[in-house]
Every structure is written in structure tokens, then in C-alpha cells.
Length: 130
Image (cartoon, rainbow, N blue to C red; front, side, top):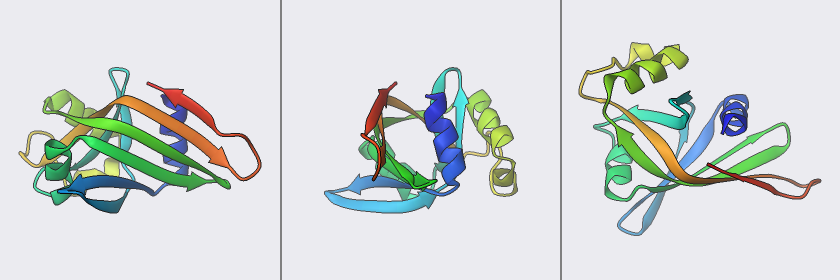
């Protein structure tokens, strides 16, 4: 899991795909954190992306760094605890200008049943699960 976190950090911007009534939606993200041995992502609860993950928690993430890319499938689980929100905001200080733990909008989701595949044009794919 830590390898996935470090890859996403190195990518800087990675892309999250959700589903809404059979229509995929992809958007750029860049906030990630490990809290209590779980990989978390963050968004605003009022945003469509959060509502899509609540309705259908199956997501995919893709990002690229150093000529390699990651494809990650998982289920996104909302964690409403203030401690999880604070940990995310502390790990991603740029978010603090838009979000505050306990504000009713900050939403952190941890990834469960995750499978991450690291790929490149020159190496065999390698998969990790967590």
C-alpha cells in the first residue's frame, strides 16, 4: 500500500473514475494519505464525485510517473471520523484553504479490496493487493 501511495504522490495528478447510472466520469485528483493502515482519498461531500462513490463505491484510479503507470481498482468507503479528515488535511496542507475537518463537506474515503497494477512498456506488469 505504501508503494501505491508513493507512486500517486510522484504522479502528482492522477485520475479517478466513478460511475453514475452506467456513465463513467473521470476527473483529476491529487490528495492521498495513509491513515490507520488504509489508503485514503479526499473530496468535497457536496461534489458529484462523492455522491457517485456513495451510490456506487466501485472506482478506478490511473496515474503516470517516470514512464510507468498505475491502474488501481477498489471500493471507496466513506470515513466520517474527524481524525481521518484531520490526518488527510495534515498530509495535504494545500487542501486547508478549501476544507476543514468537521465542516460537513470534507469527505475522506478509504480504499478497500484494492488491486493496483504497475505497468510500463518495458517491464512485465506487477500487481499488489490491499
